[in-house]
Image 1 (tube, rainbow, N blue to C red):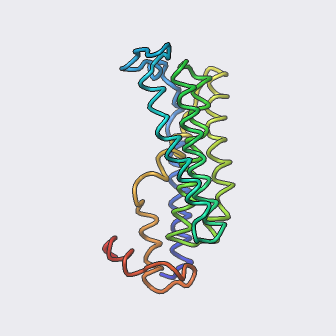
Image 2: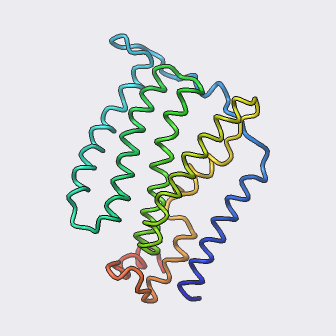
Length: 210
């Protein structure tokens, strides 16, 4: 199987999993989601544990942005990781806002930044392990897809028929942990695919048992 065929297989599996999500009926957001195990206040901050725990994420990822911006890698791949760190910073802010006053409307501002993280992570995975130009080019479309999934969920909630299916796919597909589709495409690297000349093929293939 050639590298092109393996990338086509990855595309096919991606489309198939996305289509499979919509075989299930629409999934609304349970209101019980907004009831936290720890609802204690601290310094007049409601749900303080959930709100204040976001501070380390914001601080660490601000440092991550600074380090990545000065890293010795091409700017396109740098922007992919900077986008990921920005997503985490915004998630920290959005999560604090949501947990301060938990409801479906504030949850939007928690979930939108998370989709930026999920989709930029998928873009980086594709860029590092499959094909760098492809992964970089897909960054913006993937982020738009992620944000749209949250918009669609909230819009359907306002209609009284909430639909989380697309958001679930955006959340779980990129974060499955070395997804099998990517492992399939990695075989192309072990066969000497020139699309990623600086990839340590032996290390990657040994790690995955390919």
